[in-house]
Length: 601
Image (cartoon, rainbow, N blue to C red; front, side, top):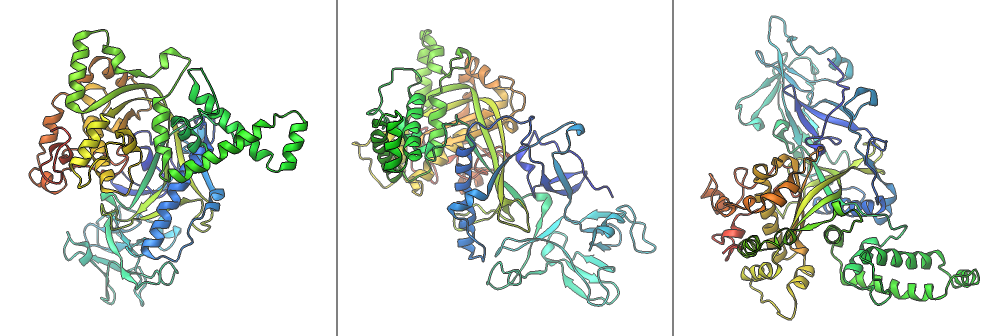
């Protein structure tokens, strides 16, 4: 058979193409073995790799250590110092063989059965695989051909994925037959040696004790059909790329401080680029403080002409940075992404953000329609962003079954540089430029809705903006908020093809619950200006009948009674959805089942 060393195009569903990802090609299941490192001229530049690395490492560390702790595995946890073993590698996507290969994939699993006599083929070495003829049964007198048996075994204790492999003690693996007692129940299937009639379960037991992965009792592997997905599922983190402000380790907390006006007392800037210049100044003071860390070094610097006030102000700023870290212990990088997008400035007038109010403010009829529309839909502001620098990164895979159950922690595995040496790990990142529309919900209405569906009372001394900003991410109120914003995003993406020219497969989303907002952007490698067109010409039409779509699903009443979301109403393809179709429920708008009051009531 071919060695399958061919280029793999991945523009349509980028993060299905990472190490261990599965895909179907020519009716055969395949697994990607490796991806090329794309740090070459064909890739866009990543402006701030230090910030990206910090954000991604924090996510990887949390997911991997949570898995180890929950399943009590004998694996080394990631510590802060492991960021030095973490690499950012860019996708190398090519369409011309002259530029090499994007990666290598192979048939997986290598298990086949004869469609006529059920002869079962497994392979002990590459020589056996190379000599395998899929169109010719090895059993004498049988003229059948082979078809892939697309099952692997998954251990729910340690997370290992294993191909089916059996050996008869007396006759090896040369005379095996697959016995499918119940075709629809692979757990009942057997492997029989035709020489001695010895019969074995198709699924072995996982010996994680032998491999020192876990001290728990060995358990039988669970059969999973790789053609139905969910074997190795890529976890993608999407962030906004920003300017590189130097060597500062605290860039996100500095950004947050700028938007909270923490630094106003130190600087008096009149420029429209106030935030950016403030950030550069803060970084300069902190860098100087770190560069001249000792009193002796500072005295020498002063003698060379550096103003001693630099160090005095630096100490004050550093104290404020430390205070901010203590005050805000949540993941503020996502909130900063929102601020970066909303407060974006450009000297190029054609690339300025556009508020929809500026489109309609000079037309009295349109302005009245917009005011009414905002009140009915619960939106505060809509902003078109013409030039977004986005980085999508695959940080690892979920192995086996990923239940939508908060009591189960999935088996997350980083992208190790080598399966033998699990010290170095990496993320596959793809930077690109695009356009999008930011939807800011009415914060007053949003917080009122949160408390209408909570047993708590709103302290009116705290503004709606402050309440959202400080909302505990582990609280039920935050989960309700995230569900509302996420469902809203999916509804609009599902309708996008009618008005933007982009189908749902060519859209992406970023959620900003603490800002009460979400961004829908284009992921198409050809920017056709669909969001620009709908923003300027048919924004109201995009929302037409949106309430009717929320009311009905063809699988109601089951859908609305159980979860309020399914593949027939608000689900999106998993490579489009930022949260794998979790945190979705149409009832956030209806208030008929799990919510006391709907957002649109």
